[in-house]
Length: 539
Image (cartoon, rainbow, N blue to C red; front, side, top):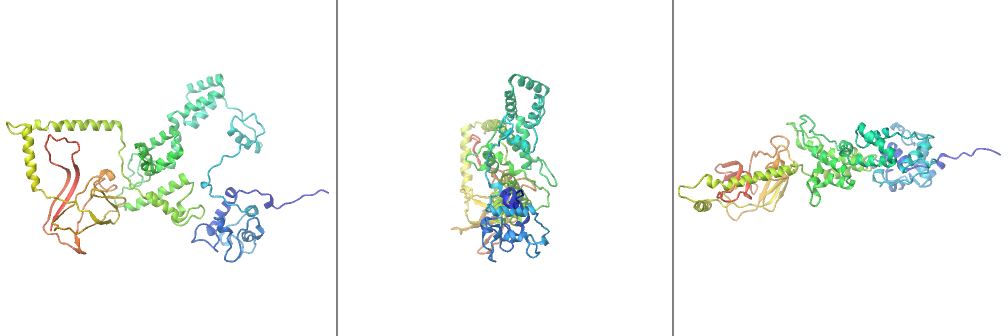
């Protein structure tokens, strides 16, 4: 007796969670039964296995591994009752028959979950067996041939040396070979066979053009540009970072080092100039220099861009959805998004003058000329007739001593508390206060001093340069006005909660180069210099 044996599709269908099941759940179910706590319906969460297997308030279980007939999800997707079927008719989302069978087969096989592919370390697959065992020259050929054989296709004819030379040039360096290079490869192929191809590949991998060709892909990922974007779209010098990427690829830098240096190269112990330069990856965000903007708004947008770029580049995740709510498809919560946002927001954005040997050499030569001119100053402007350099030094010392006796002995008052409306304030060991981080168009600094043992008759505010500030300071201006500038509009004193009247007037306002007085014979190196602006109030 002859006949046919029909088996349900679920009994023979082999399914893969990442490739077959998760796309169905993500596209059809996660909107209401995914990671978003606020949007979850019926307390059912299907993106997490433990949650999906848990008993619901109704007493049913959505998934019973190995038992699709006992799984509520199978009953709901198979129902014809519009009040029962899932997805609900009003969503306009309909599962195909194959999608239903995939879910049944998956549950019947044990309802295995696998992490999102972005979090699974890649595993080398087994090399497939092929019928034409003599054709492949390497394992890659075996994968290609296995697919061709599965599709009932045969490999194409072997490329002639000229075509092969052109292909490998375009692949590795993005440029066609010259006629002389083609002729050389033809001759080498005739004399050395397959070894000539390996030598050609090695030569192209060692070419600087290789890094230039493949850096383009990374520059696109990093949204590289040599202008700021937005309204003025002024030029900016990002090309040194571009050249770092090219050098890194040419040097075959391991990907873990390539990653760490671009995310936090400046934080490495003993960071080199190249390590700091690598962090230019996240300085490719657009900069708005239009006068009417709120700088904090565009700082926010810059960090949003950095979160998105970090997610797409290194995590294999889209992060934009989680900016407003937990991601409905990828395993990224609202909290995770802003944790990553806070990490990338925890940085200043100083401008850095790229060290160059020729610049350092020119600076040293200039310093030597300054030293020579300073040493010769006493001879150029000699003392009174009959005087000598030692006599000039003695007269200067006497004058300096007399004037110093009249000088006010200023004392540095260390604050007991300090805060501001926007910038972050840090008290340093020398008593100075460093402001950094974000700024707004008008910031207020509040400094609280401890009661003094003696009456306070005047206060002096001194502002200093610092390498961390825009253009080395002394201010924080970077987008509107001269970089490193600031404007002091008001200063106010209070005690016991009461505002103090300032008696008298502002005695002086100076901004410029301040230097200690000294004898011309003293060396200029190491002299105290500072940009300073000081206000002295009498009360």
